Image 1 (cartoon, chains in turn blue, green):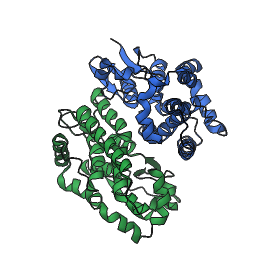
Image 2 (tube, chains in turn cyan, yellow; image 1 turned 90 degrees about the vertical axis):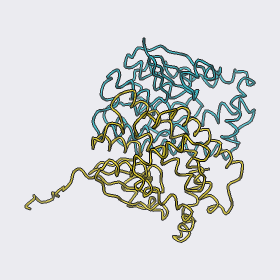
Image 3 (cartoon, one colour; image 1 turned 45 degrees about the horizontal axis):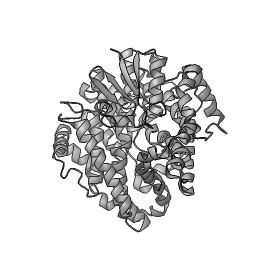
Length: 241
Length: 255
C-alpha cells in the first residue's frame, strides 16, 4: 500500500512535501484536503492528524504530521539521493539549521502577507491597520535579508553546491508572499538567481505545477463566498486586530 | 615542539565551544544534553542581560545574535535543534536520544518541528509578558493580550498531553529523547515567572518528574537556577543600565 499524503497545495509545507515526493518518484496517494472547504475538520481526517493541519501522512498504521518530519522520514525510507539530506555531519547541520530557523521567520512572515493582502480584506471587509501592515512588510524583509546574508551567502544553494531540503522548504515559503502580490525578488538579484537554480533543479514543470494553485489563489479567494470563510475570523482577530 | 611556522597545535579536536545563557530555553536544552551525555565542551557564557549578544565580538561569532551557538573548530552552528542533532551524531550518544529506527526518529522530529510555533512561542510570550514587559513599559501587559497568551499555552499543553504524551512515559515511548529535553525547558520558562503550568495537570507533572529523574535532579536544578530566579532579572537590567538599550530591541520580539 503506497504512502498517503494529505495535502492542500495552497499550503507551503504541503508543496515542499509534494515536490519532494514527486521529484524522488516516491509512490503516493494524493489525498486532497481543501482548507478553504474545511476538509481538515472532517472526522476521517481527525483520525490521521488530531491537530487538523496539513500536510499529514499515513504509512500503513503509522500517521505523521509536520512536513519536515515527513520529508526526513521519506529520505530514510526511500533512500533518496544524499544531497537532499546529506550524511556529512556539517552539511546536514547546515540543512537542520535552516529548517529550524525558518519556522519563526520566513514561514511566519511570508504567510502573513497572504493574510494581509488577500484573506483579511475578503473576510473582514476591511484592510489590516497600516502599522500592522508595515510591521509585516518589515518582518518579511528582515527574513529575506537573513536568507541572503546568512544562509545563502555566495553559495549556489543553502547547504553548498547542491540542492537540499533546506532550499525546498525555503522556496515554497518565499513564493507565498509572491502569490499575495508582493514581489519578493525585486531588488534581490541573489535571491532571484537562487530561485531560478532551485526551479531548474526541481524541474520547471514540477515546480510550476506545484505552485499553480497558490499563484491563482488571490482570484480564487476573491470569488469565494465570504460567509463561508467566517471560521477564519477569530484567528484574524488575534493576528491583526 | 618544533612545529612549522604558522601552525598551531590543536590539542583537542573533540571539545566543542557552547555559547550559552541559561535564561534561554534552547540554551538549557543544549546544556542539559551536553552534560548528561558527557560531551566535552567549553562553556562560553553570553550575558543577554548586559546585551552581550549585540556586541561586536559576538557578532563575529553569529550574525543572528542569538544563543545558543556551537563552535567546533572553524565550524559555527546556530539553532538548538541543529546543535542537538549535531552533538548526538558527533559524539555517538546513546540511541534513545535520537533513535536510528525511522518511526521513532520521525516522532522526535515531529515534536521538534511542532514545538517551535506552539509551546516555545506561547511559553516565551508568557515569560516576557510577566517578567519583562512591565519593566520595559512601566505597566502590566493588558489583560486581553495576557489572556490570549495563556489561552495559546493552554491549548498547546492540551495537544502536548493528548497527542505527544498520551499514555507513554516519555514523548516517544519508554525512553527519554531530545524531544523531552526540548519540551521540559520550554515548560519551565513560564514556571520561572510563577505560573505553574503543571498545576491541575497530573499527567504533565508525572512526566516532568520522570524527566527530572532521568536527567538527575541536581543537573536539572542547576540548569534551571537562573530562570527560577527570573524575578531578579528586571533589577539586574536596571543595574546594568541596559533598559533603554534593550527596550526597542525587545519590543520587536514580542509586538
